[in-house]
Image (cartoon, rainbow, N blue to C red; front, side, top):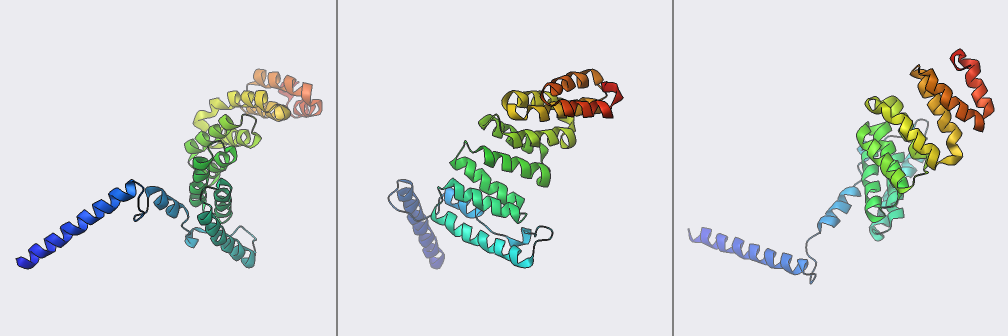
Length: 235
C-alpha cells in the first residue's frame, strides 16, 4: 500500500512537471515538446520507398539517383522549411517516383506557405484526376488554379478532360468552362472553339456545332474546313 502511494505521488509530480513545461512552452519561454506544425512537417517529409515505382523504361541507376535526390531534398526542406520552392521540388520528386499522395501533401504545404501558387493547385488537381481518381477534388483544385490565374491554359485542359471523360455527371459544365477559357485565355481561343465544335458533334447538336464552327473559322479557316470535310452535317 505504501509503495502504491509512492508511485501515485511520483506520477502526480511528473504530471505537474509536464503541465508546467507545457505552460512555459506555450508562453514561448522554453522549447520541450514538438509543436503540431512540427509534427505535420515531419509527416509530410516521411519517405516510404514502398510507394515508389519507376517510370516505364527508366534505367535502374536513374531511378535510384532520383530516390537519392529525394532524401537530399528532404534535408534542404528541413534547413529551409519556410521556402515554398523547396517544398514544391520535394513534391515534384515524389510525383516522379509515383508517390502521388505524398506529392499532394507537399504541394498542399506550398499552398499553405504561398496561397497564390496556381501551379501547386494545378499539380494537386492533375494528380487527383489522373492517378488518385478523386474527381471532385480534382475539380476543386483546377478551379482554385483558375481563381488564382484565370488564363492558365493547363487548368482549362485539365477541366476539359475531367468533364468529358471522368466527371460526366457534370458534363453540362463543359460549355461554360470553354466559354470562360475563350474570354480569359484569348491566345488559345481557336483550340477552345474546336473543342466546343467537337463536343456538340458528339452530342449530335449540329446547330450549336455550326455556331462554334463559324467562330473557329474566323480564327483558323483551315481547321473549320477540315471539320466540314469530315462531317456532312456541318456543310
